Image (cartoon, rainbow, N blue to C red; front, side, top):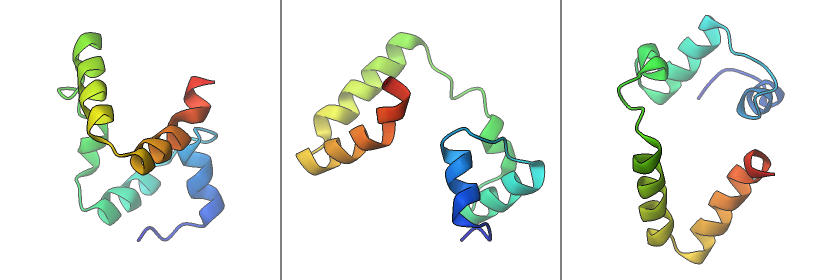
Length: 78
């Protein structure tokens, strides 16, 4: 668990604030990953690869998962 207040986490999730290095370290530790993973560029794919990955994920979701996914990305697409 990240020792941050809920409001700060929500602001980060909604891109209303930028995390400090210390905050990124806390989040990385909570996720049991290396802080460098946040900046990994080899995961960046072409537009077509991204669209294909998204299509595959969407096709495999049941209705509840799809609705949850939609809620999560709604503010990005509107």
